[in-house]
Image (cartoon, rainbow, N blue to C red):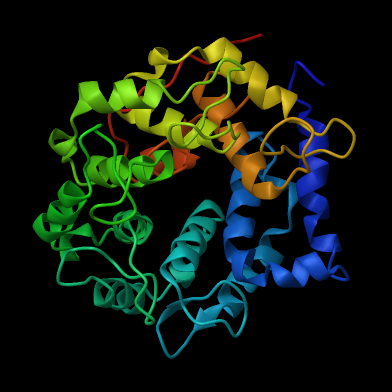
Length: 325
């Protein structure tokens, strides 16, 4: 168990992820490939190693996932376009300074076509709805400079319907509060400048209650701690200016204890196998906690803050001050 970040091992771990093409798990996770590239690139950038993966190869992969019929991006070549992979593609291309490769008008049309009469968004043409997809739509339109095309009132009205008595938000109207859904709803409201819709004292209390005695955070009451909630919970608290409401030292120690100090990567909790999903969200949590030598992360967009500031999109979030040691 390490008490400090083993960044070189994490960089090597991410670089090696594409070397497992002969393993069944690689092909069974094809539906997550675009998201995984975004997770890996963002993790590398947070550690200051954005050049560890080949830029041209990455851009070529993203463009190979373009669904010409739908006018958006799938998770893998020959996969149908989906809201999740479309946002990840936009984020990757933005971080690689290749956003000009996107057919913006067609992507905007695809995104807007998925908004339902209730205001929620479907993930794709097959119709599954979730506040995750609503956030993806708002995030993507914002990054593309097309937020003016969105029916903001209808979108906010659906988020309002998902708000619960405990201040949290669910996946759909009537669903229980969950930290990941809290993030997507709070971040969407932040982008839309509608944080007035949040019952901030109650929600921040609920979020602070997600910390367990071992320092880790869970996603809802009576559940186990998980490194990924280091981002989902912290990001919402950061956006609402209440990141000090959790014990940062205990959370930092928990994230670091979940590192694989032999092969790199971060797991959901100590002793489990690492994966790129928990690696990025563990690093994102550490960045928001002010861990030394990491790059500032924007908790609204889950991207390095410099990219968002360059676009003039920064909101009023607050992370802990970056420590020097």
